[in-house]
Length: 247
Image (cartoon, rainbow, N blue to C red; front, side):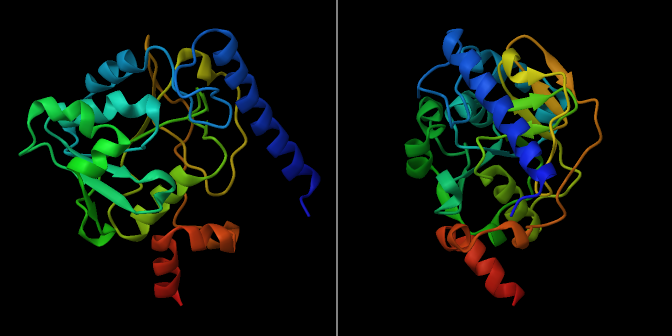
């Protein structure tokens, strides 16, 4: 049973998500796929946010970039490839692990297609986490993010699990910067209560501005198995393998 603090924290998080989703839908900010409720919302200006990201020092210095597979970050994935960087993309719900797309050897006219989910399966290759390169930058989507770096996804925890899996395999350091690209209306100036498995972002990039988070960096030390249901573990083969290795 949840205590009163947990219930209150969940209600705050849910209210923030629903408020932003509603504002995006009613304000003409949301783009396909719609409705954006229950999603990492695609937004008008996603391409401009991606271009702004490409101008940051952390992006320019990274050789291997991990980007979520959601629609609002498609332009980010394309820019990773066009910049000659290696793209690591989790498969949806991590059901088939991670894909690695190396732009070397790919015709430039395929980068746009390769940045989609179906194109990533076509032009990338499924790579065991043990064989992945060290990640130098993480770009993640958000439903809501605070100026302090606290973020909310859609509520299913896949971004946090992706992070934890890569940490467990030694492919992602806690020092690696995390960036989110969002619309301006997704940024709030209040603290978002965090769960133990949450991470914070270091930079927030919108179509109009680049913000450095003003809060402390938070990173979960590992996969927090005590918070995972059996159904969740069984749905992700990599989690089954990692749990088996720990026993």
